[in-house]
Image (tube, rainbow, N blue to C red; front, side, top):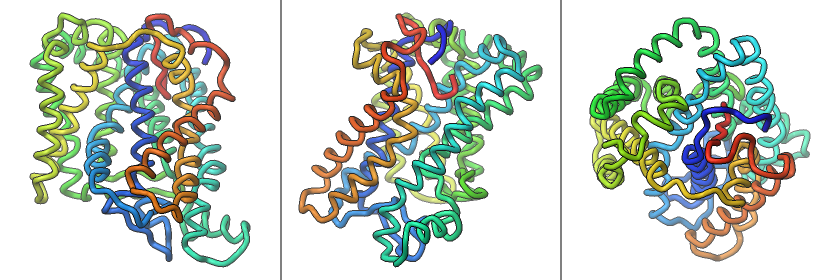
Length: 383
């Protein structure tokens, strides 16, 4: 992972690793939700490459709850370490390193791993032909499905923008941090207002789940501004803010973690019971903001001590994100003809995919704890 990186905190590292597990669980669930559909004519239009006949409505709640918060949180965590890295390396070296750590792995994942991951969808579509026919269909008819690696190219784009506008962003975000990080009420209000402004108008204009892009460079129309805003919020918080400021153990924000957990559950219950062009996006934004605060404060309050498991998971998390979809989809495909309840299949897929992607990622990771671990060490994909 490189040499020790200053200003990294163990609780953020654990939170990031936990989100990686949530991502795997989320994709493991998508074959078994009641809303899942498979399109044989163009599997890119399916909700997931493999859809089972066994369904469980509880997984609808799980998938919907995840969808409301975990990707913004991933961008927020990645943004925490952007400005310090830019300050140390300068824009040119920073972009070159991000190209190596983000863009090149993205190209490998979206070309090799996604070709392997989507092959079961081709088999389920019933289209005759060879591997060559599948590859032609993959890159033309299906328009090069991006799968989970979409996060990597979008994160790379945000890093490039941050580097280009570093002279402007640095003083602006620093001033914002001075105001926000010392005032918990102001910080929470800022979180809520920014989330609503960045998401609600876009969701009303484009709808909540519309994707667009060219080739594998896909993104969600309604959430691009939201993700960039959370990336910048992470930059405002920064390593110092994560270790001090809003996130000291004595902070009223952190002490109120039970309130944020209850508020997160309440906001999601409100979200799933509302509809309408503007009301549902507002409740979605509320869930996003409250759940992000809940996640940050819970992991700050209960960081957990260093252990071999956490160290290994932390070191492997980025690689697990890149490769897990292959194991998830093929395991779901292998279970199609087995008569088991959807919940049991979900657990099998989650456990199998977690262990195999962990082993696969570990094969490309140096032995021992991640760089700079000690009591200070998260490594976001963009860190």
